[in-house]
Amino acid sequence: MHTRVADAFKAHPMVNQKHLDLKSMKELPESHAWLSQDGSPSYGSSSSEQVPVINLKDPNAMKLVGHACKTWGVFQVTNHGVPTNLLEEMEAAGRKLFALPIQQKLKAARAPDGVSGYGVARISSFFPKLMWSEGFTIIGSPYEHARKLWPNRYSRFCDVIEGYKHEMNNLAQRLMWLMLGSLGVTTEDVKWDGSQGSCPALQLNSYPACPDPDRAMGLAAHTDSTLLTILYQNNTSGLQAHREGAGWVTVPPIPGALVVNVGDLLHILSNGLYPSVLHRAMVNRTQHRLSVAYLYGPPSNVQISPLSKLTDHVHPPLYRPVTWSEYLGTKAKHFNKALSSVRLCVPLNGFVDANDHSGVPVG
Image 1 (cartoon, rainbow, N blue to C red):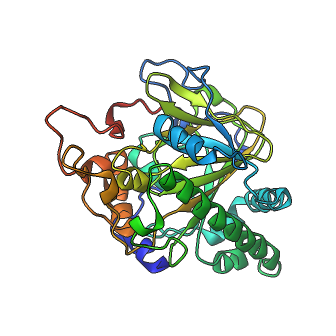
Image 2 (image 1 turned 90 degrees about the vertical axis):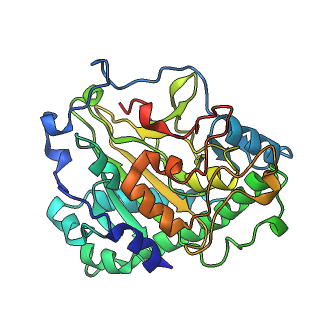
């Protein structure tokens, strides 16, 4: 399974991977200077609206999750069952990794046509400016890369990663059925079992303190190529989600809470009822921000298409069947126009894909 997902990127290797020691920089280099389209500073939330916060012990959790998916595409969850000490251990492991000297981190660098390892965001290829961040991607076992970083002391890091992935997988399956259940979908309506053979990825992101945060971009606007993504962010603000009519809305860190994003594959599965959310990460002048994203998808060879229960002659399927591996390759080629590229047709009423973000400013 891991090989199939990795193969999706081999036809689209990254070019011009530039690894800089951002922590040591006293000024923002021109290569990292972003401005919004009107030339004004890119930072800041344009809306006072608040992303929904859902207590998973609430008797109405399924209904609340459904409403959040339909109206926002992103929400935060509390009382999710993931132990607080595990979240803290995961953050500590991430900090330990990113605190290593740049030359040490580069020993576990991601290959240009690879997925796992240390490096800059894959979406960098689609933008003229570089992002103020570094990342570490784990698909499958972290062992191979961890032993390059800590030749004699990698076992603790691996144990934390494996424990975290286990808890996140359980939560992702639970969230998935809350999302589908809110659409009236049952286990009989889904031909694959998410607990078998799925190929999740863990993405650790580091955003060092930035000397000129108003002109920098931590992670440019994008949607996730997943069913759903679970994000743990530390206590430093930076995540923003885009909402139609409201603009960019900051998703504030809430102690112990986790952020849940609707991904492109759930957008397809729900036939567009639950749109995937465009989001980005801003940076901070004085504080280092760390986030850990658990990217949850179906088994990589399973065809994902609009669920038959959600389609009829009035609501025809809007997307063709696609596997996660195939869609990852499409995303690597077309980026934020990937969803539009797998659309079957535009209905006569002129409906435009809510997730074709080709016209949305990215910072």
